[in-house]
Length: 164
Image (cartoon, rainbow, N blue to C red):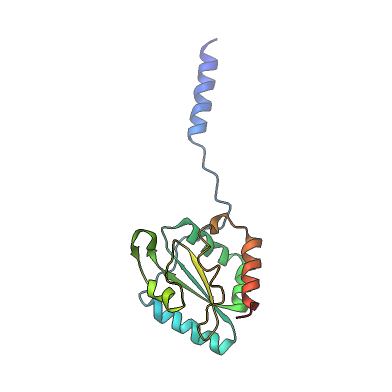
């Protein structure tokens, strides 16, 4: 009689160990785009924006960062992707780990008036002439994984038409 409760307990314990962790509540991108010529990519996006009348959406992040991958994933979601396609020229730039002194491509941020990038990701919205539209919020995206699709959509929609 004691064997049945012990066996049941053991089965439940094993089932608990085998459970799969909950999936993130954001659509995480599998890989964050990395380029050998990041400044060239930014210049190409600015040139495209000048021809299309769009703004540049410059996402500065890294593959190691779950918030960077979350933001990249949200940008691929159908609702946000349609907005980005309509309003922005999108470019990703790898910045490494600036908070630990191992930063990459930080001169790009400085060229648009951001002296420091305290973490990842950063989201810069630029006019075709390189004017930074969102200097107050560009470096506030370190919680992208915690933001909802609606929040991100609303912010990108606002920035698409924000006065300079």
